[in-house]
Length: 361
Image (cartoon, rainbow, N blue to C red; front, side):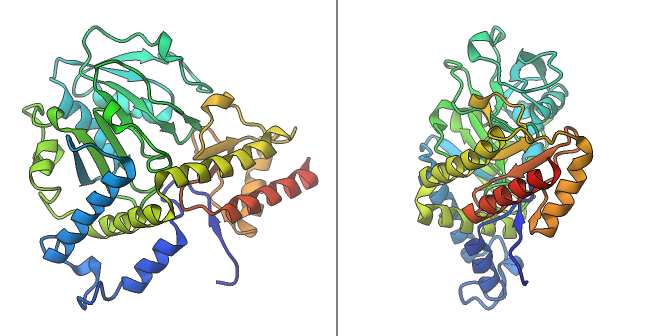
């Protein structure tokens, strides 16, 4: 390739170059076995060793307490929209959801198939530019859990704190900001995150679940949707997505070597602040999100004329800045700045934005 291309896609997303190069180097012969990791049995001692090491690294990165299971599942984060209520509620039980955008909406619709859903905040909103103050949340009398989406990938909103819901189990979809900052696992009952943003290829999801919440699935729950089955089998109840797991393991190791999630947070703040500064200092670009709730991972912005959107995306791609088109639901432009995005990519985008404004403003 004669030029560098930066992938700003929301997922599957850009992975660290060092991780990709290591996978390339090991692809045909993993650790002297003579076979590829893609070909290796998930029951082999070699793969079981990789799986165990990946769990150890993740536990260290996030300071996961011993009374939590770490599960490595296939199916992606969307499967958790059903798995969470199936495992944590009864069919006539109630779960509380905080509605902040597209992905929390999808989680609500799935949960309604398996339990009663009470929308504790955001009910009736047509657009999402802020996160409702937790002091205004109207929790039900005895919910099985309280659910929030930590980062709304499409809308560009992010919780910059952990909500306080007392002793109630707190459940969070952290798919798009997982491993981008330290989190207090002990204040959550369940945390889950699809891989295709910050730590690997698609089709793979990590679930961190407090042990006392496991083993109470609804009777109709399929075996492959029961957390206990995965906990008892060390996530090997069936053939897992072994290559995705391997890529996640490499990424965990890379994050560790970079200085851990604290270093990832510093990177995320620096990169997003630079991009938001350009937007805020301009009369040409606009970000609609309340500043204290702006996402560090997904920077969304609009142009003064929607007819310029396709021009921006096309010219950016010609400059090596790809996948900047906003989600079809909201339009506009979206730049995703996950852990794999280097500073040089953000700087290149900023230079392009300045030039584009000069030519089209």
